[in-house]
Length: 586
Image (cartoon, rainbow, N blue to C red; front, side, top):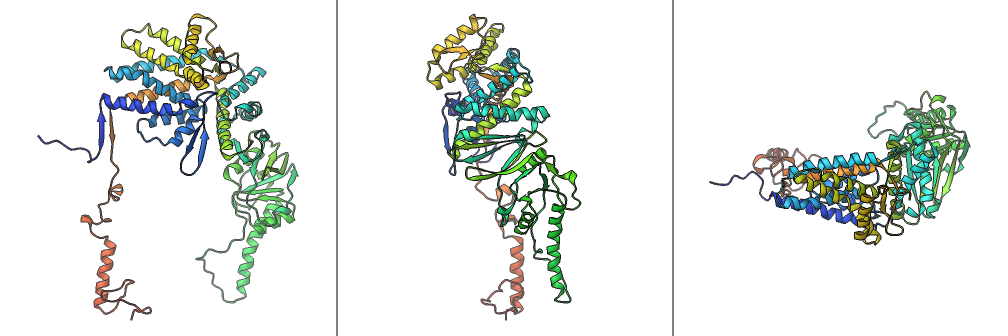
């Protein structure tokens, strides 16, 4: 019997146990790429994409820049990105956990255990691990001084493994202050839009500062007359516009019929009157500062300068929205009917010089929602990594405020959950016992990797941790002592993480492992060699049988007829005509 061909020639299909093992190996290779970045002693990766250099030890950033092509291994990229979006921290550990789970489970796949049995057991183990984390978590009240101290510790723990770890004393209070002001106003979910991070190369990292309850943005493009403006106000009125304050000529296709040349001047005067009416409206509403998302031209700049106002055009959309939130103003799309109710206000406005840049700073705003963190540093790569670190720490503090519960870091939670699952596995009959034990062993990858990255003997430290967690009643918070080597009570050492961080890590890595194990066939379609195949058009541009396009055929036919009649009436040359002169072609 002849074989039935279903797939296009060149399609790569692989199925069965071999391709499942291949997918697991690919995931392990991805986990190995970020393995050394874990923890306070983790190393950085330098990634060059052909245009710019990125130096980072943030798991999600590295995974995104690696541009992984393997279809199954991309699952680990997805869980890393979801962890980054949801929690902000733990992006490396979630990839490591998923990779280690698959490594421990690979032997079961090779020995012929059905993937569904493996998936069922690791799902139940993952659920138990999340429940155990919630039981272990220590609740706290953010309104008390102890709660604030806990937020600072969580923030410092998040910054521990970052490039700016030695400047925790500067950045942790900044970050906690900024996020707490949002929490008190009930706007934690708008953190990304209300807290801005601005980068200014040069200077020392210790020169970074926080504009709390205010907004700061870089000086925008300015015209002549800008330097004559007033650059400092107390309790100013702020007008926010989405209007172009520039003298605009009419569109190219506009047509104006005039009967007398003198009437042309009235048209020019009307154009000037339109812009002056807009500028008068801005001044008469009582504003001291005019900000617009669209350009403010040289005429408007000089007009406002003469009247003691400050203006800035081409303000970024995010900055304009932050100013609106902070000052209580409303962005206007027209200058008609402006009144005092649409104006915002703040305690003080000043144009400050920071390094080589000039910043417009709105301070003491009535709505204590917005904050701006201005980062300084020696190189562009250092500041970019600092910005990613600050963002991760902001997300961790936000998550700590939402979950109001913390657990100890440094591998302590992983060891305690691993001990719990090992004891639970003894109550299971059959293959499930081995699979849950493998899951428990996979959790130990975090403390083991912390030891390896710090240069300690992971075998000795892990055996000490296992003994401590099993035999001592007070041993549940013991983890790796990064500073001195050996083990210590990481909760007392102040290494704290939001409980949601760990719960989300375990749930995500379990789901990723299940997704990889559930794939029983991989089909990779070849890239098409025919450029028309992507649009579904036959080769040749649209004519059946590969003929010429219809428009070309009709054009050729018209040219033939025109040539027979003695002239070329279309724009194309007729047959036998080599040169056309003048409009008629004759």
